[in-house]
Length: 256
Image 1: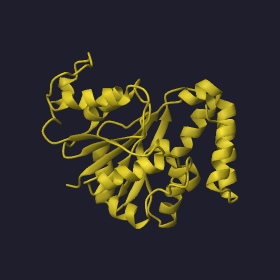
Image 2: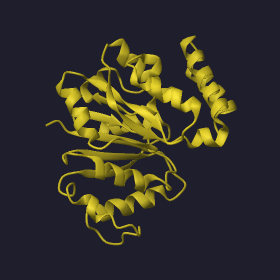
Image 3: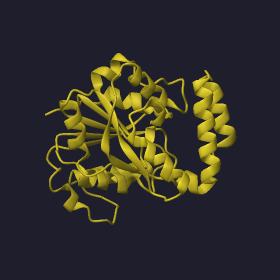
Image 4: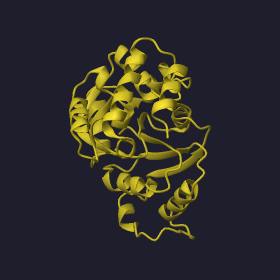
């Protein structure tokens, strides 16, 4: 059975990283996979929290978390490997670094605020065994808003413009390296740029199950406003905007 390397770029994720790791351990079906957390220089307690979590996972002492998570490890303790690495900041750089460290034949890129469905690994393996080399899940937001309900509805269609990094991404490692991985010139939009190249290779499928992703930024900045700016970024890219132009627009209207 193919091994999946779950690669998660992290940066200041202290509030939610334990929940994500617990969810992954509870929802994975097979235990031969690995989880690679790639930290981009967090300034909060993310590294400390992850280190403590890994210590508990491997039955080491001095675990500082109060949650009892032993039951989650019952079926995964023996073979699932969890590792924490540090790399240069930047999601493209962090994910490429994770791909270099991965030992699985399948890479599964997951954002730290996105939670996959139960037995997500089985669904990925089914697609791989059916001959698909890359794909994603459908997506739902954790916030009900008319704009987001419409947006998440379109993630079921296997069309390039319906894609985004929050839907997560699986890809055969051989294909990932053949396409030279993520373009590190993109401080943003790196997911969409890489997925576009996968579509050009006719190598993409959509799993009819949903990940759930955080709508925190929408709640903080306003859903209509943020969706408008994301649409402008997509349009700018389609008209040939450079990575620098996209990032300048993002910093001016989205970054906070």
